[in-house]
Amino acid sequence: MTKLILVGGFLGSGKTTLLAEAAKKLTAEGKAVGLITNDQAPELVDTRLLSRVGKGVLEVAGSCFCCNFNGFADAVQSLITQGAETIIAEPVGSCTDLSATILNPVKKFQPDWNLTPLTVLVDPNRFFEIVGNTASQVDPDALYIMKLQMQEADRILINKSDTLSAAEKTKIQDLLKKEFPDKSTGLISAKTGEGIDAWLNEIQTAKDVGTKIVPVDYDRYAHGEAVLGWLNATATVQAKAGQVNASVLLKALLDAFQAEIQKSSSEVGHVKAILNVGGKESVANLTSLNGVVDVRDVETKSDKPVLIFNARVQMSPESLEKLVRNLLAGTITQQLDVKIETFRCLMPGRPNPTHRFVETV
Image (cartoon, rainbow, N blue to C red; front, side, top):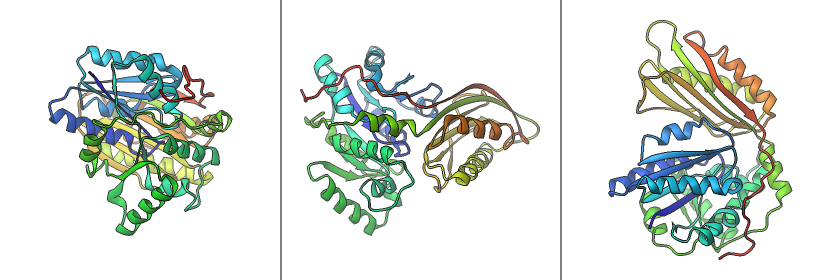
């Protein structure tokens, strides 16, 4: 029986890193692992990154899993047909109400799938904002989504434990007990691997799946998603002369992006970019307005020079599009010829689930 693991959590919480590490660990145990990414539009950095691990990766684009349950189910079935024994799926970061719209429908309509508890991953800085411990520039309705994600979870994991002091860890654990006393919670680091083995071992034998359906104000939910401009762009690139450094160029691009959004204090959900040039491939992340741009080299699986840029920022799609087009026409063009291939910028529409259960099954 194929095991299905869903990992939810808001943009920037580290879901993709966790999926990659989990897939590596399960593969090392001899399991055939498939992965599913999800977004409002195609051309994801996540899909390219996850193609390096597991048996295969499929992308469900155009809406969240809950609004395209059949597309989600088809992707799961396709990976099963390809031989996947364990499938790990990552819903859109701004998606909530998963217990009512995904887990319980799966239990009813796909009883042969071995569904594990819904895990929600949370960035520690966002956690303090969610519980009102620190001030936030995030729209209140986006914070509402984040809290709903935690309320409906079977498991809450605070990620990035490697960035926390002992005092901060204790404070988080105390707040978790106070705010979510009925939840199974923990701290992990998807980056270093701390806590991942214990989490995987626990959820694969647990039986409490989709146990909590929470009331959702869909007006607030829709607005919380709509405050974000959503941009996916791809471009072919070519070095103009000499040797170019992919990681240096990518950091310059995201540094310039960050400098522009700081002018308007437009909070970041997540910005991801991947650049393949000069035989090297690098990926960059920015998860908050004033956060640090993280850049690292990754395994190069293609010789085709390409740039993929994904941004979810608390600003209008029109402003976000103008900003990114200007950057791609200026910031890195001293060293690269950049030809935009695809460019999609949108505001997410109102969630309209395929199924919504009001009681658990």
